[in-house]
Each structure stands twice: as C-alpha cells, then as structure tokens.
Length: 582
Image (cartoon, rainbow, N blue to C red; front, side, top):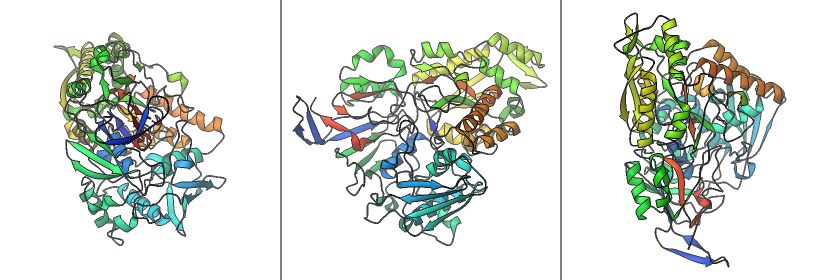
C-alpha cells in the first residue's frame, strides 16, 4: 500500500504487529470454561524493525504510501467502504449503507450510514466526503504540494468528473466514461477515507494553502486536528522511534474495544524483538524468519502463517536520470528478463523462508484465493537460469570484462538500495547478488531503513538503480488488482518509471464494463502481459500478515488477532481483541 508498500518479511506494516498481552490492570469475568476474559489491559504491537509511521492524515502521500501508515491511521479513521475477507463490500462495517449505480457505470449514489459519527458527536456528512475528495484530487494533480500515493488507481483523478453532496447523507460521484462498477467501487470509492471538514478545512477558498497545512501536520499526530476521529481509537501519545499509544474512542459507532490501551512499539532489530518475546517483555509479536529454528523457544505464543492479497517484487530504475546511464538499459525487456532469470526463487523459499512462501509469476499472488489472479501465472515465466540469462545478454551485444557485462561503455554494475534491520532480508539480498554475479551483473548492496528506501525510490530517481523495501505490494486500496497505480505511465507508485503503451491500453481495458467473463478476461490479459514484460522483478511471496517482520506470533491469552484479521485489506481490529487469564 496502498496501494501500500508491504515489507512482507521484514519491514512494513502495522500489519507487522506484535501484541503484548496483559500489560496494565484489568478486571475479568469467568466464561465458565476455566478461562477468564478480561476487560481492560494493554496490547503492545511491535512494528517491524526500523519502521515508523510518518503520515497520519489518512489520504497518504506517495512518499508515505505504506501499510504501516494505513494501519496506524485505521486506528483513528475508517475508510468509506470496508471489504470482507472474500473481497466483497461489507456494508455492515462501512461508512456507507448502500451504493447504487446507473446501467453504464458512470454515476454512483452513496448513502451514509448514520450509526457512525465523529468523536465530538457530529454526524459524518456528505460534505466531509466531498472535502476529502477535493484534497485527493488536488494531491493527484501534477506539481501538487504533496503527491497522493493512490493517483492512477480507481481512475483518480482523470476519470472522475464530479463529487457532489445531496443533502447531508448522500454523495453522488459522476465519471466521464462508462466503467466496470466492480472495479470502480473497489478501487475508486474504496480509496476515500473521510476526515471532518469542520476540523481540516482551514482554507476553504485556497486549496494550495490547505495542502501546505495538511503537509505541515501530517507527521504531527499530537496536533489538535487529530482529536476528532471516527475510528475505534484516539491517539493518546506519540514518541518518534519509540511508541504510539492509543485509547478507545467511546463514541465509536462500531464494536467497542475491551482493551484499555493499544501501543505500537518501535523495534531496533529482529534480534531485539525476538529476545523480548523470549523473555516475556513482549508476550507476542512476530517470529523473525532468521529465527525459524528457534521457534520452539517461544513456548507461550501461537504461530500463524497467512498470506496477504498482494505480491512480492523489487524494482529497477527505468528513468533516464538513473545513475550510470542504466535507465535506458533497464528499459530493455531482455535485460529485465535476464535479471529475473538470476533470481533463485526455490532456494529463497527453502533457505530463507523455510518453505513458508510461494513462487511468484505475475502481479497477483496465488494466495489468498480470489477470482482476480490468473491461475496460469502460478510460476515464473522466466525461472531461475543464470546461464540462459547470461546468454540472453550476450546475444544482445553484451560482453563480460573482469566479471562485469559491458556494452557501449555502460557496465551492468550498480547500487542495490535495500532495507536494513532484518537478517532474512540481508540473506535474501546476498542470494540475489550471487545469482546475478553468475550473469556478469554486479550489484553493490547499500542498506537503509524502510522509510528511507521508500522515500528515495519515490522521489529521487538520480540516487538509485535498484530498490527493494523488503516486500512489495499489497492490494490496498486497489482491491480489484488492475494495476493502474503500479504500472500505468506516470502512476504515483510507478517508482520504476515503467512506460509501455500496450500496458496502458490493457490496464484501461480492465476498467471497462462488461460481463464477468469479459472483465476477468481483460484483467488476466493485463496480468499476463505484465509478467511477460518483467515490468518488475518478481520475488517469492512469504506468508505474513499483521506480523510483517516474519510470521505472526500472539500470546495464547490474547484472542481475536487471527479470527478478525483481514488478509484482503491487511487490517487488524484490536477493538475485537480480548485478553484472558490463560
């Protein structure tokens, strides 16, 4: 995410959660089965190493478009539309009670659910939705004060003609062309996370000033603008690179939290987090992939291994400004194919992820199962074969000199910008380095924290050639995985600067209305072409969830973390968690 960036095995999300049960006082009632369910207590959620939330306004900038930000923000704010674990609209938990549309999918009428209100008691209104859209639109335009990370997803902003309020509880969204309603409800309307206009609309007649204001407070969670929320929690305190503390919102219109406090805790490294689990400083968390052999030492925890709706990948910089003159080189499909042939997915799965991962061949993972992934792409189109990759380069005029492929004065030697703080990711980076070396491709690994890798890849094309933030992409908010925010020319999250007219046409076709067979056929055609192009380099997709640092662990007396987790949206719901005496 977002789109959001997912550090599937080490670095991203609040989804990367560890939960400390039983911290603080509580009172309890007996269930009659020897287990006492407590009211109160604290859950501490350990963020993956060196990962910090840094954008608290729920419509995220492109440089902060990560799962950790979305999931932290989801404690305070709710999206307009919630989706269940079958990727269908869940009206019982959405801010809208119904959505209707006309026959050609150009106009949508949304009715707001009156049970949800702002924490100051005011209703959530159509005007709040319109204001949020106006900010989203402004942030999606060229040369915006800050760039919205979801631009290009769900037709934002070019396909949207207008968003208007009809009274206080109806919103009408009009598009400028016929559209697949399933796609637009998922990817267009599904992006909006309303904020109270009465609090945020500081400059009603000057959107530029408004955008500057939002930017100035986006990473200041203790600013008073965050006092009015519609989510299950308020933020109580925030200390950068330390912890973020949340307490229940007593005016929340949904299920009230039985916990008295939820704390998201910064971790300096996987080893520190594992030591805390082992000693009981954290009662639950994530099992670092590198500590797989030591998992039996965590005797008080439960280990799970779910898969998120997304896929794992790394990117090469196709921008003409890429260092070393490599942008035009990476624009060549055969070069990307050769790089893909240097990735030993089976060895990564067995040696690094201990079998808890699947091979990837396209831009929609094979797990969890949804109708939206092409079954034909269950395995890589360009499987591991460094000898064939080297021959492909030589066929196209490259020759090896002192262990490095060269052509017309350009060397296939460059910096690999990768995340720090996770031993399994370091091991993966070195295995990639070794595979490419067999092809005469030399990479120098430079590790940085997750936030730095994301911001550099998003906004500094002159400073990197290859980047991996420790995971890839989760399909939020593009729950209908049509790729517009990832691979369309100029899309906000197209960090690699992939520019392909056929790709653009296939993506656009996937947005069009038609029968289910027609729309899925268009979606699969886009997925196949993306895989053939090696638009990004596909990596094995590890099992992971709210424990993005590895495989999620939770204390045996902390209940609800697995049953309420949604792998489609990658959302956790601490307001449904409970603590018990055993």
